[in-house]
Image (cartoon, rainbow, N blue to C red; front, side, top):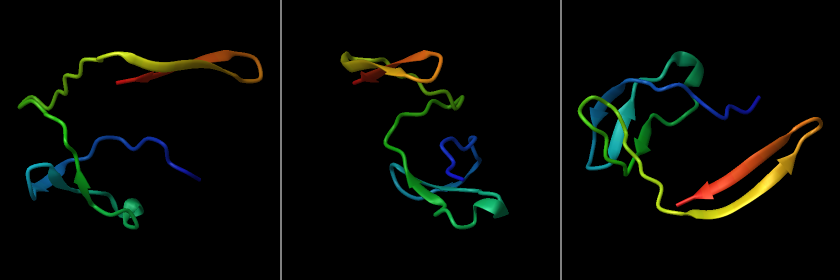
Length: 73
């Protein structure tokens, strides 16, 4: 099984300007617990992003529906 989304986890400590060590559960022991996150995170842990422009868009056809795919800068 390939995980595509993992819920947010608590930050154990900040190592550098953009490097954080997370507290991960035991079932994620094979995943490295240090990540680089070059994003500005507000004190209330909210991230405010503003899209600049749409780079590309396409439509993926599944069995019974169409999904719009958009690449945003």
